[in-house]
Image 1: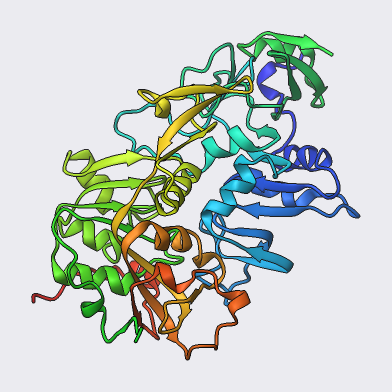
Image 2 (image 1 turned 180 degrees about the vertical axis):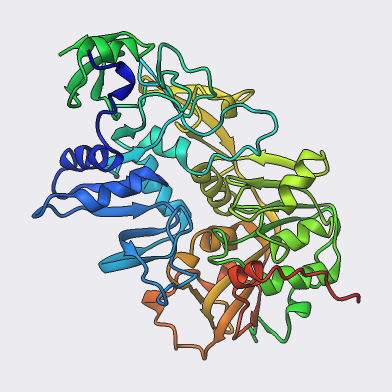
Length: 218
Length: 240
């Protein structure tokens, strides 16, 4: 019998691709810093998606090529980027009116922990020695219609990131709609977790064994 | 006669007093008025409360102002950057106060301050540690946190072009907090890459109308902050 620790599930790219498949044509999308940014590379041909970056741009294009970087054209992660034809610049209060006012359709974020009620912790581990920093995460989860989380299912030390209750400080309560992990895609519905799709080689029992929160079959 | 143009960054920051609240535009280096900040380092006002999205990189710009021990408190959303060394050290030593404000709340508190709105309710931070001690109120079945407006004595803002009435346009994502900070300060001080004749900026394209701006200095070749940081430049100020 194959041992559990050989099961890795989807690669990060495959996870990003799964998220991309669920973003509809015409969506206004905000991608968090890091792995969520990979989603843009997997949007299926024929779908037009407009990327919002909260520092004041709708219509974010690809990362700027070497030699073409403009220090006054950056994304939320302060990377040098480009703007597509048809892009718009605006100030921060307008940018967060788009977020808080419910005008952005989808936001994809990373996570430290997600609870079975869809609570998200992704800004602080509560470590007293860390410099606290929150950025726009709390505004995004409070305002964007659909919050997708993309994350490894477990921490580096093997602990479940999908938990009964978050032990890290919350970013928002009951905010996550769907979790894309390397093991499975899981919907949060009425404060319960329903497995939507399992990665190759992952069984429901294996998934539950590696998940602190209670899972339900579809 | 209205002419808001001044001749130097030194003249632009004149009168910033000890204990003042100073808003500083920028998202990282994009839109950060490095020359105005350095003029404030030279000028030496201390015990400042600074409102800015970040807390500076390396040892230039806002980081230099903090390193020169002129800032007693900072309100910001993200005091960490890849190369922020000054703020973390002073924060851990308990020598600078931090009020952590979510980015959208920060922008709206500033906007409200300039718009004559003393407070507002936002859904951000409900049920998180950042809402502790704040009024929670329910509207249409959902909970919101009351947040108070922020006003400043001075705002230091970078823009692309200005005219002598103080009408401003910005460049790309360097706009960020500039327009809201301009409206929320008693004295708004702007560094413009270019000062242009009245009428050059199409009235349809003015982003910040001149009524919100008090002093403008042309800095035609502003420092590239990330370059200074990469070269480990330290700004210590010029004794006046």
